[in-house]
Length: 68
Image 1: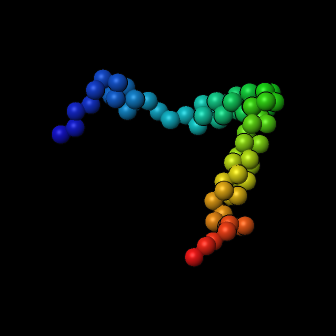
Image 2 (image 1 turned 90 degrees about the vertical axis):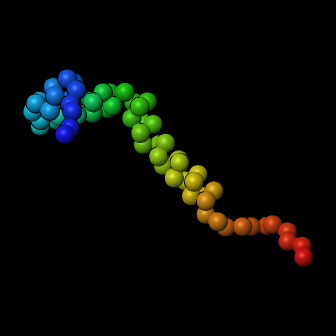
């Protein structure tokens, strides 16, 4: 037996509206495009992180003196 709280019962009966999802997505996309700084961060930061972690985690070892 599953006991639902009052909030869970309200959510269960609401219908999914694709038009509402698309409206919110369009609004958020407009905000990102209008704010040039946020748009630049969305493009630059992932590229920067891929480059940095690619170099750091490459596993290549150069110019390390080894003594036995």
